Length: 276
Image (cartoon, rainbow, N blue to C red; front, side):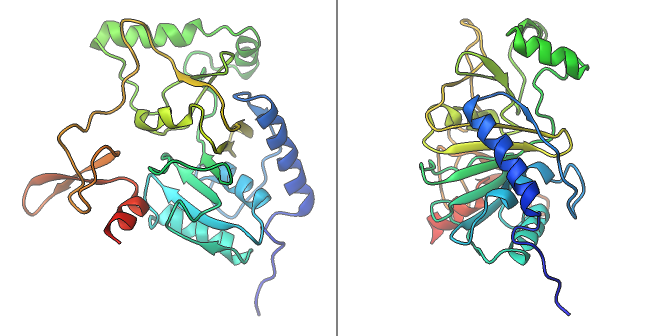
């Protein structure tokens, strides 16, 4: 006997509550909106926040793409797609240009997104001040006062110790010259894609019960000093061994048999499209 689910798995009242929180997040870019995170048949920390956003927004006309660190066929991506398609009738794709709704973990697609698309990011820790201040009530006060000196000190300590800012992912950003925001653990390479983007970015943290957002054409600046400007990962002189792409984010792969190191597109959908 087949199991019947509500469309999008969540009940309608739950979806309405999540949509209301999403609208508030869009109205105040970078601000973390609390919401009543629901229980889902996946472990917390495996993308429940992003999944709740997807299940609340998805419609029959949507085309879905799910990415896990750039991969379309990882265990996480495959199982999320299975759950979503089991309780909806949407099409899925590996092509980011065909998708209307993209749920992702730790990557932004290589091809620039459009106004008619939504990118939903799974977020483990939404609070950029958490390493500086452990108390939730105190971090709220710091955000209210725009008191971000602790973030600047943390970046400065990196420079003193290592002569560079070592944040490889989840690099802090300033949104509309107001809120410091965690872009989720995307690589620094993807930070610049957030600035004045045509698409809508939604961030869901299920375990922390927070939703925040970047509407289209939002000013998003990565924090940096005048004498230590923000820098992304350098892949100069390197290219994808599979499709030959340059000027993209590349994964370093070690081939055990030959002992060689080669590079491959992190965005497998982009790599597949180039080859096709």
